[in-house]
Image (cartoon, rainbow, N blue to C red; front, side):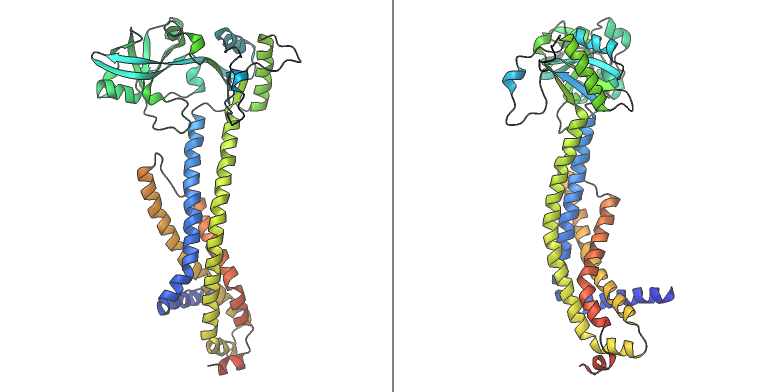
Length: 415
């Protein structure tokens, strides 16, 4: 054990000595490692943070949830909108039928959306998004309340004229969002009492439920002041725990085809949009971006590895007489090999640490200007250190092998 520690310590001292004696040469050689680690860890940290933000935004649509709509949410250049526009919109009674027939659904709700002006005294907010929802909405999509409370079951049934305000709307109308509770606001010329203020959500990349700048009210009320057919109606179905999305989709397809009385040869005249599928597609896209980062970093690491190998070749040549002396007094070839491999690995770690410091600085700058924080995970840090060690060993294997196989007599005579 002491021998191993001695070898490690001796290799570390030799690496430091190399850095001190040949600062410029060592720095230029390690620069490739620094850039490689900077590229790969910078890309991984940014992409992982962005993916986490997008995945969280997708989860806000509801986990294990299917949106039944006339429109397919896939999009693309060959999107057949002319076919979808002819489809019937989902009906409220279809939502009720799914609720009674489905054995795999834990929650089913009906939603419509529109835009209107929101008024409080002389303050008017234009183009506010309005969401009319049924009782199970909060079981499908989590609506966190900052002040006040959520809509009760009796208020849904009685079509109570109440609303939940988005945080930004409450702030714009009342200054202090907490003051909004119990106040009367006007929507489509009708009075509504504010019962709750939704917790601040922040910017969303998915852009599905922008609660900050919206109002939420019972569907039974909103359907009386908006035309349902022109308000993007859809049905949201959340599956029970441990129920696969495939099973839920099959059941919903059967129920909807039955409700629409479609023959076996007829294609669906509705779309089942699986949120889990969007999450998987997002992971695939970000995986491709990561591959691009690995490709760029790989080139830098190869250049860096050649630089480190060059340092080690020069080092072996400069220490030839020392190597011969060590072998003459009994040092094993494996000990010489280990010393040079560790020195090479330490040099790469130094280059990698410089790269990590640059990445930390970059994350602080980007976090200040981006709408989401950029973090470096422990997994990414471990990966960076592992890459440095692997590159160092690969770069030093040939010089270390040459050093370990030297003839001590010939090596001692070398000047």
